[in-house]
Length: 298
Image 1 (cartoon, rainbow, N blue to C red):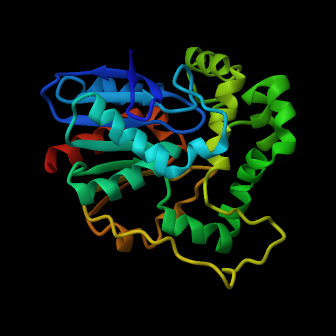
Image 2 (image 1 turned 120 degrees about the horizontal axis):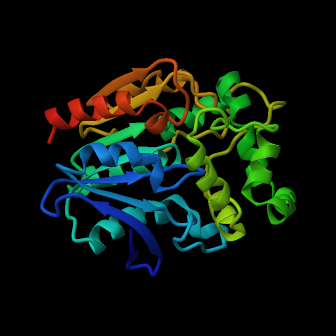
């Protein structure tokens, strides 16, 4: 691991493995994990690719500004390009999961315009256009997204101060988080230790608090409001691999409906019988999908 200072002054802890002259993969983890989300993929691809995996801002030892507006999507997307600049990487494939996948959508859209991102890999992270509608129209998705309202409610901050991020997760998910019975004990222990850092806990929560996405309450109408506006985003035309585990409790497969219209050059791989944390729950399936995709695109 190395410490990388971005042009903005943000410092990121970064795992950087593989030949320095090989094509680059930048891996973006999601909430509430770290670069270790991608441990199986880095082990698989580091012989042929420059594998770059940061702990993103707000996480672990990386910079953890406490103000909410330090986590708006433009800054998080900017971190990725500034990281590439700091490491001397011109072009790269972006690989994202969960919140890292949400940022990867933005990185890919910007990267297709400036020519720096020739392809993208996104696992269980909904496209922002479809998701913004689904939380209004789909009962399953709205019920599954209520935890975001809990995360955003500053009335719950004392729980974090008293018990760390684990306390907030217990409240939001009613005592059970999806990693409970699936994660290796040593990895769970690492996460539990990370979650005790109060500054990191608020940094992670600020990803939700700075997001422009509105999640309606369960008592609001199941229809788009009169002032609803579709996010003004261009189609993503670069080759894009979407990996979707079908047993995701937070993100049902309805998120895939109509995705081919937003991502016309998409390869979709569905992974049955696995849940949200597919990069480490089903590493063989994810690695095989990436192997095939990376082998047939440039």
